[in-house]
Structures are given as structure tokens and as C-alpha cells.
Image (cartoon, rainbow, N blue to C red):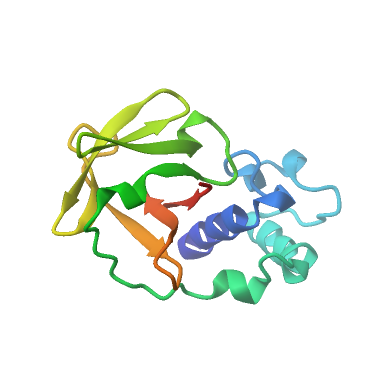
Length: 163
């Protein structure tokens, strides 16, 4: 059950447009379920969300959304490639909209909630600085075939590059 529960969090983040987790753990309260769901228990919610919403998903399809991304090591040799705006979807608060800036060779993560912390490049990998409220952790970078950054994974969440 634990694995299924955590896996469904992932699915509901990928297909946020279906509103299957507009509030955290909405499947705990029957009154927050979509009107066409008829079950009574948490596993019913999961099963109905798959059969009534996710099997018909088109962007991405269920198969595409479940395909593992090919991991490539991305060596950061120029910190300026990280500069830009990123967002976690769905954007639920100011922490989910981020700008990474570079000032005199120092990188900064600044979110729309006006909270910022340093970023560091350690052995050609991106890390949150020791001043990060979530602790020091590696931030994974995912690139397109032409080596442009498409998104970052920070704190187990995907931040899509928007410019």
C-alpha cells in the first residue's frame, strides 16, 4: 500500500490537469473525490483515477509518463548555462517558481516567495548550498540531445526550464 500511495503521488503530479490531487491526500476524504468516482476506499480512488482519467491521457500518454528518463551525466563547466527561470507544475505557491542567477561567479536560487539560497558546483555537479532550508543536496540536471537544459530535479521535484 505504501508503494502504491507514493506512486500515485507521482502520477498525479505528472497529470496535474486532471485535478486528482488538488489538495494533499484528497483521496482520504470521500467528499473531495470527483463526482463520477463511486468507490469508498483509497485503493478505489487509485483504480478509478487510472481507468477514468489516466488511461485516456494524451500529453503525455500513460506510457510516455511512465517511461524512465535516460540519465546522462552533465558536466557543468560554465555556470551561466543554468541561468534562467524554472517552475514546478502544478505551481501551488511561490516556492514552485524559481529564477537561477549568476553574480560574480556565484549562483543563486531565488523563488517567487522571495526565499533564496546559494548553489554550488562541486566536481562539475550542481548542489544546493549549506544555506538551503532543505539541506545540502545534489540537483540533477536533465538535458536535451543538443545539451540544452530542459529541467532540474530538486528535492525530488521536477522544475521545468521556461527560459
